Length: 228
Image 1 (cartoon, rainbow, N blue to C red):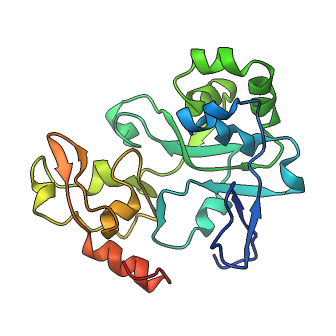
Image 2: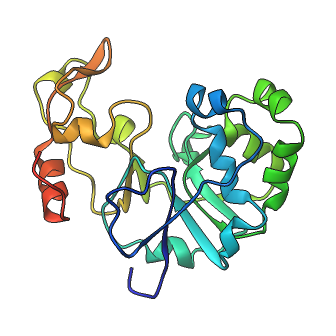
């Protein structure tokens, strides 16, 4: 980023973070301990907490399993009460006519503006967890004015860069296009799987892969990562 910013990590484990990263607890939203581990998506509703540790201003929230490829200033400059990724069937390709479906892997909003989301969930968490597939579906049901990033800003590794069925085992993934600002890893593989940390096969039959992606290993090392 070119301008001033605060880099905050909401986490229950701050070990190993760089000094400029502010580690803060994940706000509670009324979950039982087993709910945190049975389905890790619901604790994310804590980002809509009305207090949120006293933070102020425009927030760009990014999931941990994302690869930031280029400057992210445009995400802060974009206008809209709430902006997210269209993670629907066509992953942002609205021109094909598919209805958009919120993916909260990278969202932008004014802190405190969506406190009703966290408050509503705290009031009856068990019922809502049984009524909605995940926190994204619940959030979309609570917020009527969601906008979506341009389809080429946040791309899916699985849907944009993987090779055809069977070829992931022998060919490198495609390189991200220059228009892509952030690469999303949802489900499997995870970013570290493509950097060689995972020695097992990843993905599901028939669409399975194996091994590191050379450009991701270079990216990791160029940006201060340790040796794989």
